[in-house]
Image 1 (tube, rainbow, N blue to C red):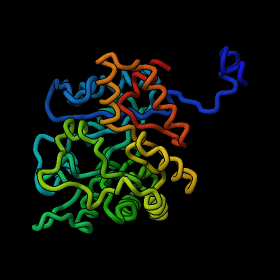
Image 2: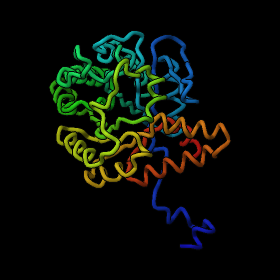
Image 3: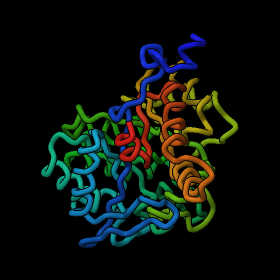
Length: 316
């Protein structure tokens, strides 16, 4: 084996971890408006796209060998309830229909949350005292998932971290004729410092306070396992750990404990760090990206949600 490592002879035959375009999921931001292709300053190479531009971008993603996208919406207006999230003519609902009409074979996963649609930036309904009302939020999240499934989403991905939301969404989908729509649960979503560029892209920075009351403490791993098992019991079909690289041990532990299909989200901060270092000439972007994504696969992720997806697929 020492000689194989040194010379590269037969390296592909003994390589333990496989990374291909089929393992990658491309996040995309769709925004209200026409002919919008707006760069996200903190995420070089990422843009907010109006629906027609989104369809073009999805076609390029497919051409690179990636079959799955994760869709985030940026509405024209926001309110306290986040009603744009479950509007039948909301930005994501219209985008789903356009994507599926253009390419029925594209797998469209929708982010199911309220933070992109609420005027206060939190992931649920806020009480007068500024705390999130968990139970009322479940009703709104279930309505959101139902509207996305009705528009043609192949799967919904609740990212809010409210207690009981998987059961509420599963019940709503089953009752309304969408029993076959899978739920991909952000079962271990940490209150991380690595989300800043995403909040810039989606305009979802909380107006007051933070999300530590419902997102997980980065110090905890057993909690991630418990939450993942609860979500599976409530009807989740796949799990997500977010972020990825600072939590590779969590990816491994959750996969080992549950055996369930698992994705890891290589988040905006992780993406932007590599981009910034590469632009400064401090590292080789291609080598760094492929090493990072391979490490996520090695930890146990079956799929990787990453803003590097299209580039990585072309490099692979």
